Amino acid sequence: MKVLLVGVGGVGEAIAAIAKPRKWMELMVLADYNVKRAEEVQKKIGDAGRFPVEFIDASNQKSIEDLAKKYQVDLIMNSVDPVFNKPIFDAAYKLGVKYMDMAMTLSEPHPTDPFNKPGVKLGDYQFDKAKDWEEKGNLALVGFGVEPGMADVFARYAADHLFDEIDEIGVRDGSNIVVEGYAFAPNFSIWTTIEECLNPPVIWENGEWHTTVPFSEPEVFDFPEGIGKVEVVNVEHEEVLLVPRWIKARRVTFKYGLGEEMEVLKMLHKLGLDNKNKINVKGVQVAPRDVVAACLPDPAYLGDKMKGKTCAGTWVKGTKDGKKKEVYLYQVADNEECMKTWGCQAVVAQTAFTPVIVMELLEKGIWKGAGVLGPEAFEPTVFMEKMAEYGFPYGMKEMTA
Image (tube, rainbow, N blue to C red; front, side):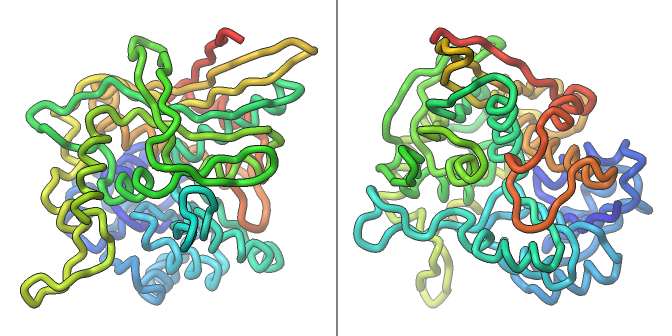
């Protein structure tokens, strides 16, 4: 397989590191606006022949198309902030190559009732074009990271094998990771963190989507493998928009453990520093959110300062054989192990393994299709069987029904 990797930040680096030992990976182009960053990753990977470096402007569709044509790639892997999704997605469609991302096109709040009704939903731009992709016989894979991605595969597995009827599918994410030396240092893109945490969260309930206020419905969830109890809250996330398209469930939610980060994000919002639109600052046009991102440490370089584990998983409630049942399917990544094995911190490594497994399933013809498809559209066991092989085994915890 030949892949154009658009974006070589923390997750992009982890994708390349996890893909390197795989013989089926013929070529992966490390393309980034910051060429020095891409060269740094190439040096760490140590295989310049299979991992060439290129400059790319992810906001420019022609730049993407030209590079994809230069290397005659089979797949364009989107590993940048989702603000760039549209030109990357459209470039893949125009060229007739496969597309994959880990976060869907951005939402826009309802103009008059944002905390009750959805406006433009995550992924609407992509799903509106699904028929065009299907008629062309081309495949776009949307939401194939860890959450969304692995968590959605778990939901499909539960629906296929563990339950007769599902009451709720609730993705729950929490960790005990600390970053030494920093009062506030998100271990994932701050741009994306602000976007998903301050937008109105979406909930699927009784056959329709509705929104609520950020950080609503707090609950304490007991995470496995020593992480323990963490307060989690509603956050806007793709699983809620993906799962109901393929799986029948009365309710679908996503809750995330933010800890002290929640208060910081609330303050950024109060001050208007979450604004992604440019403003005039002494004659210079700048987006406040970009300033916040520039002031914070790059998550790609935090690995040696991070301690602890992160857990991503799917809590499913329903019935089997007439009896109530609850199961939590999960994956726990230990930062020390991820740094030792991949040279990447746990959060980005955990996000990166799913797309690499999916690339193998595509290359070997195990997963196939046409249109715009989420993880729920595919047979789940072949993916889950490969998780341990890739160093990210899953676990399953019976909950109290």
